Length: 273
Image (cartoon, rainbow, N blue to C red; front, side):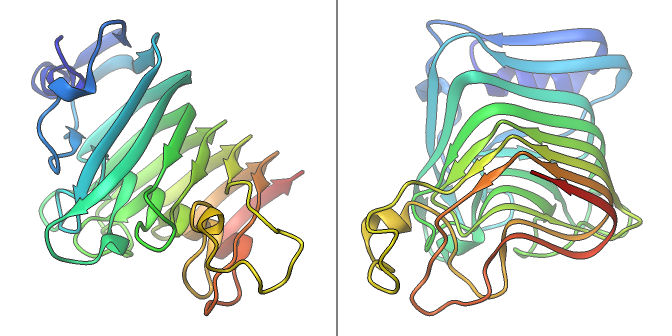
């Protein structure tokens, strides 16, 4: 396939059977993808005992504009029925937001979105993202690194007819967004979430000087720009494991009660160092 989007279109049209490995190799160029703010979009596929992986065998930086509107909020957008899908960066993939196009607040944008809509429920039964770097333009201008919720309004829960199960986020580095990992549903719709080995936030200047660096550019490159949020923030879920993550350097001049990990209405969870 000439582009990732072409591979996604074929997967959507033809479905998958057995093991399907989509490998990104040299001389792949992100410039050949559809023009922004159209996301790289996978709108579901049929699966017959399938296991689908998008694997990066060459170093790639995908830096794209987004737009604060449904259907255009994310760099990577997953919807519909997603089964046994893995985004494997292998330490070679960086996905970044370069700017927000058009009107509307850039705070209604994100980097990777798994989303429902008013017409299409999200049905995830196996999704993983591993060894990828996600970079927002600024913690003040971009909402999420990884977002699971509805696409109509950020932030909102996936629709009641949706289901997001068996989601694994591992060895992902996220910075430059307000809410690095944000998952929202209910205990009935979101189950079996694992977040392991991730690094959230950036190194900053003058970290030991209270209240002196809130507007320093290095802090804007970290995370946190609202009240009552978390670096890992899950609202409504069942069976959650969070282990061996590093969450650092959240500060904002006017915000308060930012937690490294925040769980609301989560049943049966395990948090490990």
